[in-house]
Image 1 (cartoon, rainbow, N blue to C red):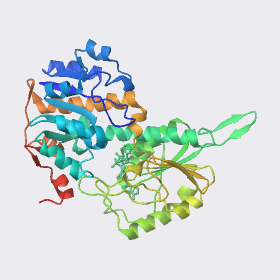
Image 2: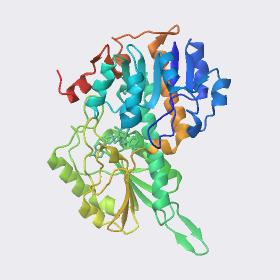
Image 3: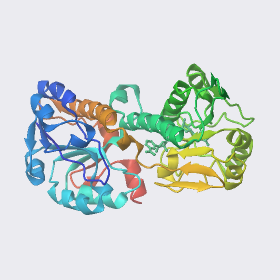
Image 4: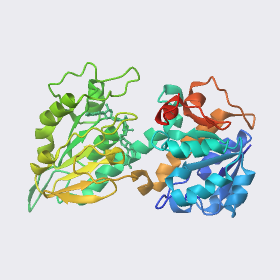
Length: 384
Ligand code: NAI
């Protein structure tokens, strides 16, 4: 079995799908790895390091595609309309493609990928079950995003994070409020605590209270009905308009009282809920910072502009859309572990062995044999 790792073509993408340290386990399982020249360079992994771990470096992208039975990338062809189209032409029948594909938001690209008759896996669809934890790339990247969100806030905040006494007076600790305590939110809490901030957090799922507290954060209790906040998979359910309005109102004082607000509230497959309306931003202290990492899906703050930093009513609002790429070494390390584990799951004795009854294989598979098969993707395409 040959796995090909092309260089990422998405502008500003610095991650790479497999890093040298993941290769020995793959080689041991009979998987050979081809890496496009310079693919790992921007993440800090030189071609020579790949070669030392047994990979072959290939200069020609088309040659890499034609030799590899599996293509592993960070971002799929849909991420880069120009170059992605060229890659689509290189995909062939039964070739396996693994990468982040944004499958629920790009039905047209999923159809184009299916039309190549390749077998397409989307890393976003890895089920969040215990057995698949080491393949859960969304969690890995959310962790990076939560960490980077706090660092970004720290560089924009005109204040220190930690409290300290100096000969020039006492510096009070920054107050950080984290909204949404999933993977990204918990990492944001941990990072803000390490920097010395006083941290509060809120989540509609009361089950996360203990996790927030174990990181040294204070869990904010709002007098809201939360008994039906979670679905059977443990994810937040979409709120009604009335619930959203009530939450905005009850949370407003906590937002206004914070120097930094990190918002991560997400409901799988849905647009992010607006939790901070303009009127609340208006009430924040000038110089405060909001980092809205839900920006990719519309944002949790009404004034967020995805991909931009704007100042509104004296408040800096950051709407980052690809935070993991700003920490490419470790983001690649984590992603590589996730991809390598999935590869080992899909291969047996050096050959591809797809068990279509397996929850992980079935759950992650978007298309095969010319057909889109994943029910949620089909739904977004309006098909039966
Ligand atoms: P997650 O599903 O683990 O956590 C989201 C949390 O939000 C859950 O705990 C959920 O209960 C909570 N939530 C939902 N509705 C809420 C509400 N109304 N009020 C308070 N909490 C609410 O998701 P994860 O993996 O932590 O990702 C969080 C967000 O970060 C997602 O929108 C994801 O797309 C985004 N993300 C952004 C990146 C970037 O570069 N901007 C990179 C990685 C993730």
